[in-house]
Length: 209
Ligand SMILES: C[S@@+](CC[C@H](N)C(=O)[O-])C[C@H]1O[C@@H](n2cnc3c(N)ncnc32)[C@H](O)[C@@H]1O
Image 1 (cartoon, rainbow, N blue to C red):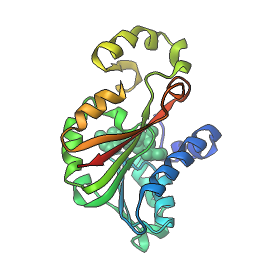
Image 2 (image 1 turned 45 degrees about the vertical axis):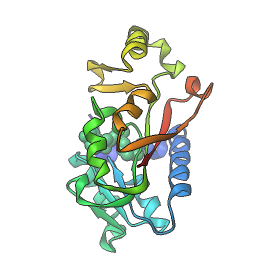
Image 3 (image 1 turned 90 degrees about the vertical axis):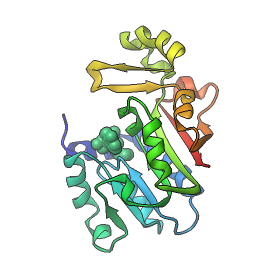
Image 4 (image 1 turned 30 degrees about the vertical axis):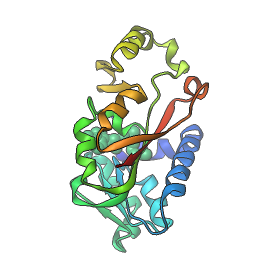
């Protein structure tokens, strides 16, 4: 287990993760109308939230982990003081144009149907949910026994979980898209084609119908 501070320092020091984070933030910022508000769902220590707030987006943050929230409160104290970042105890406590969930937040869920139902009350019609999730087709994981043992489960059922990995679930994009219906439509998947074999993370953009 790590504290919020350890996670924070690790993430900021990892060039590879920072490159993925930059790409994710850029996709979100390009989609957001000027001044639109956003919920960073599973905000962790507030690394993305600080950036969204700096770009003029009022940013709600929700995370169930106390260590993460504790570090976020320190890291984003100025933004919180001037209400550019607003901490909330439930994701349902805001109504926003967009929800982001960066770095595998949605992999903590066994099923996304209830989550998308909840988020349909949070996101305005025409708004979006942008999530980065562990890419189940990433060939870099093929060296692990658990990946090879589960590839048929993935193809047959669209998902699987590894008990030893804190119940992190892996999903095909199609399985998540099915769970989002009827409230959201999968509008974009990044990467596509060969990138799905080489990128650890995939970004899924859902449009609120
Ligand atoms: C790998 S961290 C990513 C944190 C942050 N989004 C970032 O980009 O650094 C995954 C986060 O998901 C959060 N999480 C776990 N279960 C969750 C749930 N049911 N709802 C919302 N967030 C959850 C964890 O507390 C953790 O902060």
